[in-house]
Each structure stands twice: as C-alpha cells, then as structure tokens.
Image (tube, rainbow, N blue to C red):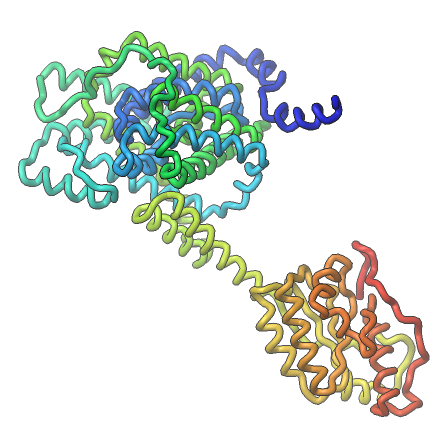
Length: 584
C-alpha cells in the first residue's frame, strides 16, 4: 500500500513547490523586492486597461493581477514569470462577454483552470517545443493588431459599439466619432502612447507608462477636460471568494470557450517562460509545473472577480531586466498591486479611460518585433506564408483557430519538404559482389538484375511518388531494394511498397530487399509486404551481397543464367542486423 501511495504521490509532488525555490528566494531577496516594485509600476496601467477592455471593468484586471499573479508565482514552473491579465486573453474574452455575459467569463476562467491542471498531470507542457516559430510570430503580430483595434473606441472617447468582430467594432467607433468629433480623448491617448514609445527608446529602465498615465490624469483633473471619462469608482479591496457566478445549467455551453481560454493560457504562458529562459543564464522552467501553476491561478482568480490570466511576456521581460532571480519578485509585484487596491482605489478611479487606451496602443506597437518578422519572411517562402496566414487568422477569426490553422499549414509544408527528401535511385552494386567476376558475368548481371536504393522516409506523404517510380522498372528479372537508408516506414508506406512489389511480380520480376532495420519489420509484416520480398516468400536479407547471390541463384534456377555463373549456395539470413550495426 505504501508503494502504491508513493507512486500516486510522485506526479503530484513534482508539480508542487520545492526546497530549491525557497533557497533561491533567500539568495537575492533585495534585488527581487526592487524588481517586483518596478514590475508593479509597469503592470498597474496594463492591468487596469486589460480589465476595461475585457468588459468586466478595471477592478477585474486588478484582482487578476493580484490573485493570479501571487498564485502563479508560488506554484508556477518559472522563477521569473509574472502572470496576470494580458492582451491576448482579452481578445478571447470579448466575444465571450458579448455572447454569454460578464458572469460567464468568471465561469470560463474556472473551467479553463481545471483543464490546465489536467494538462499538467498529463505532462502536456513538453509539446510547446513543437510550435514553429513562424506560428508564434504570426500569432503575436495578429494579437498586436487586435489589441490596437480594441482601443479605438476608448482612444476616440466614444461608447463601445456592439459587435464581436474587432474590425467591425473599430470601424463603427470611427464612424460615430466622425459624426461628432471630440479631440480630448484622442489627444490624451496619443500623448500617452507617444511618451511611452519615445521614452522606451530614450530611457528603457524608466516606467514611462505610469508617468504618462499620471500626467494624463493630472491634466484631466486640472483642466476639467470634457470628453475623457475616467475609470469610475473602484471597490477598496478584493471581494470575498464566491461561486455565485457559476450556473450549473450553463456549464455545457461554456465548455468550448473554456477550451479556447485554456489553450491560449497554456500557449502564452509557456511561450513567456521560454522567453524568460532565453534572457538569462542558468534559468530553466518546468513546463508541466507552469501549466499547473497557471491552472491554480485561473481557478483562484474568478473566485475574487478576476478574469482568466496567463504569463505576461512584457511584464516578465521587465522582471528579468530589473534583476529578478527568484519568484519573490513576482510575489512582490502582486503585493504592491494589492496595496494599491486597498489604499489608493480612489486615485486609480480618476484615471481617464483614454489614457489606458494609449497605454495599450503603445503596448501593441512594442509587441511587434520588426527584426524577427523580417527574418521569418526572408527565411523561406513557407515560413513567410505560415506567418502571414496565422496573423490574418488571428485578426479575422480567433486566436485558437489561428494557432490551429498555423500549425496545420506549417505541418503540411513540413511534410511536403520531408517527402521531397525521399529518393528512389538506381545504383551500381558490382563492388558488393564477393570475389572476382568476368566481364561476361557483369554484363549478364547488368542485363537481368537492377539495384535501387531508397533514401529517407517511406511514409504517406512520399509513398505514392515512390510507387510510380518503382513500377516503371523495365527489362529486368530481379529488383533488389537497398533499404538501409530508409529512416521510417508507416502503414501507408508499407502498403504502397506491397502494391509495387505485387505489380512487379505480376510482370515476372522478383523483388528482394536488403538492410531493413529491425524497427521497420513490424509495419512491413503487418500488411504482408515482408513475405513478398523473397522468391519463396520467407525472408529478407541483412546485407546486399546476400541478396545479390540469392538473385543469381534464382536466375540460374529459372534458366536465365547458365550453370557456370551460378554462385555457391549460402545460408539465408533471416534477420536484419542489430540497431547501430553498419549495413552496406
């Protein structure tokens, strides 16, 4: 019983905080606290802005940053990750709010959190490494465009138009503003965005976002600017935990949105953690534990009125650049924001919505890495096509569909490239024959026996082209397939090979095979292809010389070669060499 309990506890223990986390906190706690304060200053306007953009209000963004930020910092798989509301998640939440209402977002977040925990126990984090870079870059570009378009109503100072598609909503906002132009909100949004973008180039370490928002708030208060509504009253503190938002009758209709939120939360969080690893030396995140931490964060945040959260690339990058070395920095960031929620809610409530729109506009611009996009576009045509298609799908459809489309297209193009590497070519094999041979023997051999070497994978994407090439063989009695360079064989490839061999045999051509790897026997035997690769249907050959001697014996027995050329009988070899053994 104790052994069973130990086995059951093992997977759980690997996802929980360890002693090494505490040791890391002790080593550089001063730097971590300072880094946490810096990240909190940067995160405040972003949390407010993303909360407003999601449709649940600024208080939801703050609650998410505090609760999810703290839980993910403790249980996540990265020492440097900072979690909270993000622009990518906001893009997914807007249509959920439009279709199901604000309360549904909280239920979706809870369900998505449970799904992420399940993915963590299923050890799904490792599969993040299979997402191609063009898909990630196109995804990021599309998100940046969507975030920018989402800010158009707020930047223009107009009411949020109805609609789910961001392009339609932005266009309706522009039409409404054009009928009665108001320049105050536009000026504040543009001013904040310009200050942030220019300031980042001039002094990257200075949090110009909070300075620009403070300046915009003071200007709106001092001059009584009209046409620039503020956030409004915020509750002083976090609400008590509650499950009142979850209607059991609506759970079924929320499964699909929850899957989309879970997929995005996992993808963005693991991507952000990978970025943090790349910015440091010696830091490596645990992808499964990161999914577990994000799952717990998304279970906890809705209980306090928060929206679904993910790892935030921008805030994580600020955390790393500020000198953070442990998860204490992310905890400090959440604590500082909690203090603001409890002590400065009245001040935060005066921030103009247009200023937050300016913050997110600048954030969208800074998300676009022109150098990376240019590099992807120049790499190959396939990479450029995947990038553009993923970005357009993100803009026109939704983020999960965009990633799936990008993966599908990238996978198809990759299979096409791999399939093109598979080759079937006729090769000379006199050097493989043991002993000396006369010119007459070589001539007879050349007239009746031909060798083909298969290079690369023999699978569904390349097999049919292989069939066409092989069945065009003419004027021979024996074909020897040299298969030591075949990298993989799937069921389709085995069936195509069987079909080709049967067609050749119907024309009176015997097909032999040499060098089949042990791991490929199963696929070939399962479809009956292995039994066809010998005149008597019982064996294949480990080495090409053995197959050549068997071919010449067959030609002797059928009267094609005279008795003088027949080689001595050699024992048949019924198995391929062990893995790693050289195969001629």
